[in-house]
Image 1: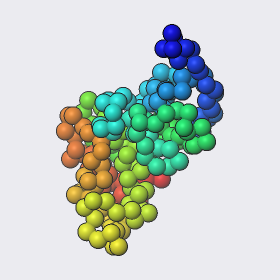
Image 2: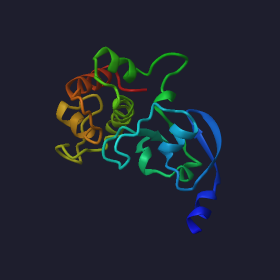
Image 3: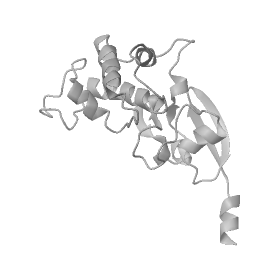
Length: 183
């Protein structure tokens, strides 16, 4: 009987996603990933492991990369959420999206949205001089636009590509950082 009552509980949730407000009635246990995919039809964010280990569900919350499968939707009612669908501006792809295509930085493409979202945020973290585990000195973080391949691989290590497109992903990130970073 208690299980039946739990399944009938819904809460009003207001989310701001890709610049638009959405009002939903959700089970309070609904993850942000499931809210995006199942309730809003934003299927660019992928469900991979559903345990926070693969990075396929990476999105931006208030400009920071976040795993949507580990976040409850109700916890983000005052946040600005950006998904892969929200990167395109006036029909123009984000530079990272465009460069991923130019560099053939995908094979099956399943992980690509999470890789792109992570890459954009990672370059922003580097621009803020946030060190990674391979940064030689935390007091002397790498200058923006000068991340080595090793540094990029470390900063992107939370995103798994089962096809092994890593060399092209790293090349795409190098090209975007050399062109002045992600906007």
